[in-house]
Amino acid sequence: MVQQVIGDAERRVLTAFAEAMPGPVLVVDVAMRLVAGNAAARNLMPSLKTGDPLPMGIRSPEVLDAVRRVCGGGPAETTQWVERVPVERMFEVSVAPVPLDTAGAVAIAVRDLTEARRIERMRADFIANASHELRTPLASLLGFIETLQGPARNDEAARLQFLGIMRDQAQRMSRLIEDLLSLSRIEQTQHLRPQGLVDLALVARHVADTLAPLAEETGARVTMEAPDGAVVVGDRDEIIRLAENLIENAIKYGGREGGAPEVRVEVLRSAGEIMLRVSDNGPGIAPEHIPRLTERFFRAESSAGRARGGTGLGLAIVKHILARHRGRLTIKSKLGEGSTFSASLPDA
Ligand SMILES: Nc1ncnc2c1ncn2[C@@H]1O[C@H](COP(=O)(O)OP(=O)(O)OP(=O)(O)O)[C@@H](O)[C@H]1O
Ligand SMILES: [Mg+2]
Image (tube, rainbow, N blue to C red; front, side, top):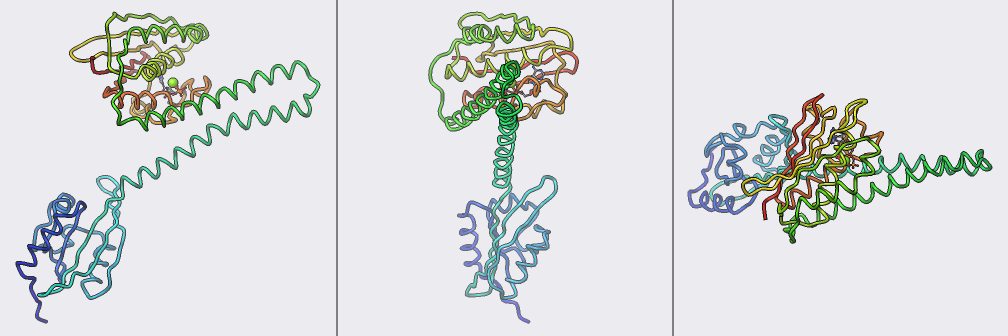
């Protein structure tokens, strides 16, 4: 069989066309040798050069079979390509014939679905987690309502006790919903630079005052070192939430068994940056948990989080607030020695 060769002018057109496309695009001849490709395709398959057989760049049998069928005269088709190493990635590959004047060719367009799939999964997890968090207090509320309507109908003492528990559960649900709403609000405004000037020292003192009742409950001793004039550009309410979450965590989780939490709140100024540092002398956090703390609904195992009614949203909110303020969160912790959470913000 005489194989026809794709002309130079056609090659140039194909290359220009591929380069105009955002995603990886390749063109092969009917013998599956690379004729043209764009930068995105070179990025994806750096070892594949013009003239090379396609299997040198793509090993996926599904994709190669599809290309083979189209090269043999078959109609256009779309297939999936999953790479497992070094990390799992998923692509959708469209293969279509390109009849040229001189010879046949086949175009291969690749779409990376990895990120879209990851977001899809995150959304599903998020809904499952949020529903689960709401279901638990709701089930308990319903249980107590039924008891009060039935067996405990005339039991004055039980009624008082149950109503107290019911109020706690309802408060827990309302806190959860408030946290979810503020997360979505912050996410929506993520791209807008915050306006306003906020004195971090004033905020830290204000938050420590509002948390005094909680500190009394856990026996925490809060010390403060915050010089005046530590001003950042920011949204006051959001900066308050940020400080609240960090200081509240230290007061809740910062005590070692039997001991009262020693919480240290510092506002520090350094070159171009202002830092809010909250340290405690608590049990600390296992190294494998540290990177996960800012995930929504994440609570370190064996922590007092569940018992103390935490929903695991606090640090996710902190992370989003800092992202909007162009700041960052650093977490240092050693098991048995306590934890330090540092939020750095650009100096106004
Ligand atoms: N100072 C700390 N010491 C030890 N563990 C901590 C500390 N701060 C946070 N953690 C751990 O990180 C987890 C996540 O904290 P986060 O603030 O996101 O959620 P939460 O406190 O459980 O709930 P929420 O803040 O929504 O009420 C906590 O459940 C806890 O296990
Ligand atoms: Mg918290």
